[in-house]
Length: 102
Image (tube, rainbow, N blue to C red; front, side, top):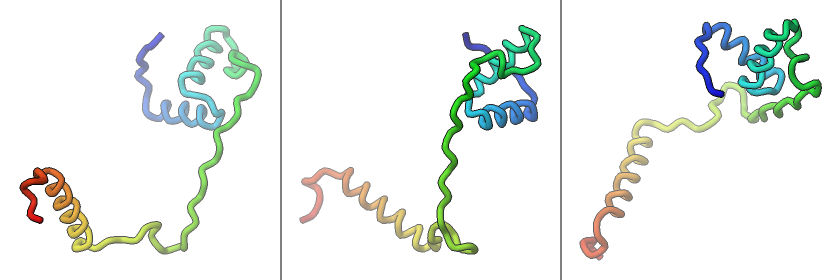
């Protein structure tokens, strides 16, 4: 069943953080909290599965030199040239082949 909850931002962030740390979806964590509350249990984990779920893998770090950007910066002129090239290519594709000079 689908429902809507209005939670204070701080409470939502805390619950979402717990879900990520436990490797479960927000839906599953909230369901276990509600079940635990209905059963009078103080430990929400005991209301759900006894098997802990596997944590998601950690993100992979990108190797870069400290103090340098992770990608090269383009000047305004370089950006404008790229945009002009794209515009011209799109224009050429949009006109009929017969109208293009050879």
